[in-house]
Image 1 (cartoon, one colour):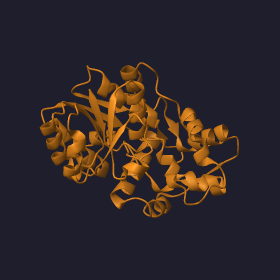
Image 2 (cartoon, rainbow, N blue to C red):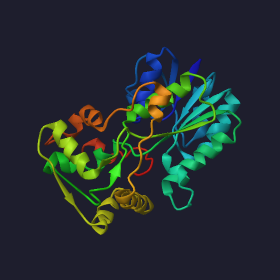
Image 3 (cartoon, rainbow, N blue to C red):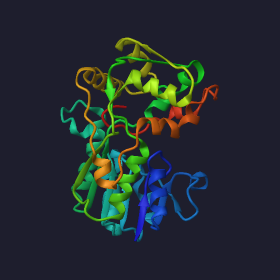
Image 4 (cartoon, one colour):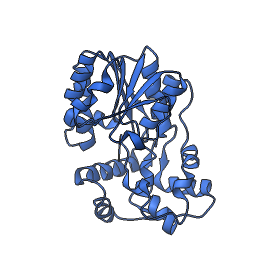
Length: 298
């Protein structure tokens, strides 16, 4: 059985690849630049681009299962090509934001388009719908933590159920490797709801150095966030945070039900990324320029 991983050099995709390799699967991966992909030597890396479906044809030949990174603009063409090539099962990296059916949720509409294309294909499918990735803190707060020892954000009492990217990869890999997940849409969260102010406290505790949390107004946050996000995403995030002050999200046990082990804690995530928060790193750190797929918020 051969499994193709798209988005293989991303925060989740790279971990999916590692888990599949560890399980002894035959793994292929797609990269725009195979020479610099940095994937395990057991992985057969093909040059390809999800935005250009025809570039995936060679990589899909003989593939039975596909891990699909969300690119809605070409999702129907990619899925049709996968079906034509003999793929039987697709596991989609989606988002919990698809649960918002108001039509005003930018992330929800983005990911729903991919889910719809896969669901209508007639192939076996599993949707992995993470809520907010803890890795988003690297580009939201990483620079100010490294250079100033401070976090400025609105709604300090807004609680989030941040998820470790390795939990998302674990669920995706399980759905790719084992049966019993067809037709399932798994909403994933971390194991605890933690306010933004307490997130900063936990980061400080794990790093072993003082950090300050300075609450700013939504208007100030809108201006700052607008430099890194499209405006619809900014409004989505601020809306989630405002709502979470009085209506904190409830953690789900999906990770444990699917994988057999509890979801990783926020403190564990911070420990795994301590180097990314280390003081006096270069201001142009890659984490500040690489927001991850989002669930309930960016």
